[in-house]
Image 1 (cartoon, rainbow, N blue to C red):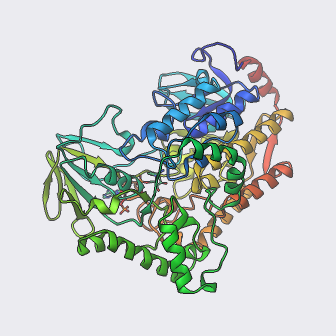
Image 2 (image 1 turned 90 degrees about the horizontal axis):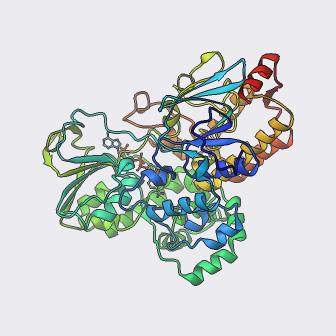
Image 3 (image 1 turned 180 degrees about the vertical axis):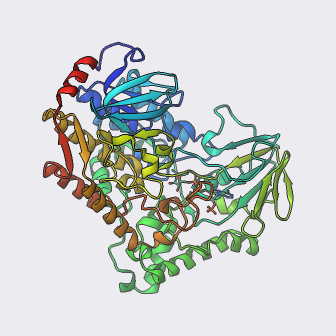
Length: 559
Ligand code: NAP
């Protein structure tokens, strides 16, 4: 039982197995321990932290205000922790997660270096059989997948990736020991949020930096700053207010949309708002803007022209500036990367931009990279090439539901879920931040807490009724997926090639052409209203079963 000083590695059965010891897994196990439910967390990493354990590249930090990213469940924790920066960096974020796990004594429920390779639902016993990389097979009534949305990194599908004789790594696998960048010739491939953070951070620390950009990304200043003791005291006093404000905004950030209509105000007033927001910290320029920028082509084009001009003002060489301005999508229709000194990096003599749109990457060589125009030599190649997002981490586990159906096959064209948290045909499988949930498109920990809380209410409902199986109905799942698709229809984001629409040139089947309805875009308040309503009505969209005779035997056997 929770609280006992017992090693869990000799046990073979749990009520709940949580996969993933990141932000979601940590909160998930806290809730399970508080409910007195026997559970363990399995993670392939050597320690906890998830995204903040893996992504150690220079410049890696929050794009959410730190004090809106932290857990909200414990007043004591809120009062104890001092966020040192408005947008805290990876080392501090990892320290925070360790602090939380240690404060609530959660580490003892976690098993590391435990890669979950396969999971099979046993229809007779209503138990999941979970196969771990170390050879063990564990059983449990419920599995909670807390495996992240951006945790399956992808490399370019070009020849020679293994031929390079220097050092090379994906940003997700940035080495744990310090990487000596001084005097090095470094290549960065990719200009998403990761590349943009990294480039701004290392431009003045390397001998030579060459950025390989296929398509430019819109980006705006992070405007980070330190948080003093007195500011932190003020934040602590306002935590309730801050979290309440987050709950009311579509993205669960402190930034909510401007209440005025884009066309109700003059162009001068729009420019005044944009001038103000561009210089303010965080996502304001994206999320405190007019709602129309996400849905109306003309409104979006006017804002995009404004931001393009800002880029031109910051990049000295006009040709380079033009290359850094996106032409294929408008501002904010992909998740907005926030930057520090990114555009100024291109004003440095040691930073060069290679436009892969003009001269595509041909292969990696022993000494560097070859494009259709040139050979480039490097000491280090960094792949900031993104992730097989949303479903990628699920596809890496062989998950078999009713009738042996494989989840990866079911989701091959696109995921389909009920509320982003359940999948028909895969009973007792909970996904607090699954595909098509709101947490995928919002300030992640806020979405995580909502998702975990809903899953735990469901779990209590199941247990209090003595059910052993819970499976969302196919009809409910189809209705939810249609609703998620409808939310895309009104958003300009449906036209952008980004991980929000399931685009990734490095993953077979995810190249251009198919829009996958990956995330719920209706906003947190609407999402919360829907999921709370399902619970209040007693979960009519979920089929529950009581134990069969065979199941009773299985329960007895595993007790
Ligand atoms: P990403 O947005 O998918 O960007 C990947 C980049 O690599 C793009 O520029 C892409 O070019 C390029 N690329 C991919 N494959 C390539 C290839 N074969 N050849 C050349 N270029 C290639 O991934 P990310 O930057 O890691 O960001 C993903 C998400 O992680 C973000 O949207 C955000 O949600 C999250 N994130 C958050 C933070 C934070 O501030 N908290 C920081 C980093 C990441 P194309 O655009 O042409 O595909």
